[in-house]
Image (cartoon, rainbow, N blue to C red; front, side, top):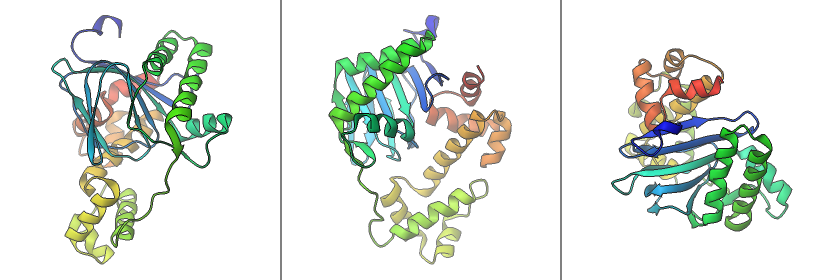
Length: 277
């Protein structure tokens, strides 16, 4: 990134082969906004400049330098600049497997770990997260792995507890789960809301309300996020973006490019190139 840092928008979303189970994103965004989406794994984001405004279920947090944003798997959220200069951050996206591995080494957490805070003021952790990135970018595997495990252990020890078991809330919970299963199965050719409700024996409005209550977003927003997630897996496996677009149900590559860039933070071509190194 070198020459682009400090001016304009830039981003690098990549994987370091010596740190399996981890995605890395370092970026400066000004105009970019992330629509409501969720992740399979965890988010540990150190804001290094400006202000990031994160929309979480029921509230908004504003994160500045020295703070760390913590988000559990499948928690819907948005992100945007909270100041005219935008925000810069270094983010770790550890998989559930990596978090479980570190938690097992610590030995003090029972069950599946979950962060109990959305944002913490922890300048030391923030610096360490940035150092993980620097070490990985320098190809220093020993330092990167040591720093990564240390900061994840710190986050889990200080700010985590057992992740609550997700329950199907309310009378529409089972219908929402069934609707999600149908959409996952028919990602490339989904039914309309009316068709989906008819298949499940409920009304469109009742299904929409139940789905929002359960997953924090309406079905069409969830579907776009799910398509991008599946496209990421295809790109990880070496599939060209044009083929990935059609496979997940986008009309063409520009359609994929638009939604992928909004949700992931980099275009699919740049994302794939970083995995081909």
